[in-house]
Length: 201
Image 1 (cartoon, rainbow, N blue to C red):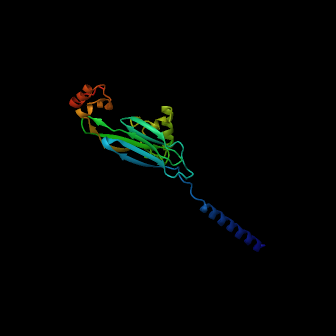
Image 2: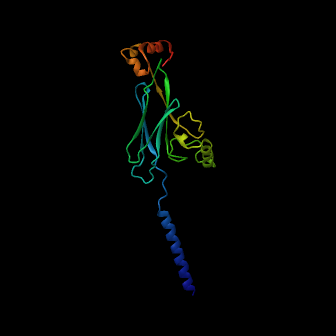
Image 3: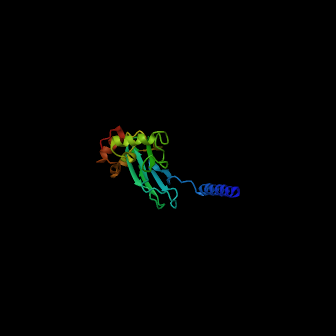
């Protein structure tokens, strides 16, 4: 009888060990697939931001991931394809009365308080963050603000930023129809801007 009980206990220990080994063999659940982002700054601050899903063959691809680019509170966004092709947005070139700087902001938004947002939302991972962001969404009535620009009052959204150099418009650039390239109605309006900084566009 003792031999049978010992055999059963031994069989139970073996079964438990096998279960532990099986659990250990299962890979940890991977997080949602993020994006690789490249920022290229050209002449007069023209900035192109290109995003591509990090692992197109992965199982945790996110179909609603967006690249968002913002300049002066004016945002544009595009879906990042899950097939591995790229999404890109271009801001600029930028022109003014003199050479100055412009801030181009960008982020990858994944569709909520997700670990693949870039940069992570302010407060992500802290206790109560999910409830706080849910309350804020209820207050404003939508989650759509996460793809809005930097002027949006959302207290959770952070941005990556790049400072770029703008170009100065010259009188020569205003001539021969060039004024239209800068949004002026005529050559005189363009030259007035160069001379005085008065922008009457």
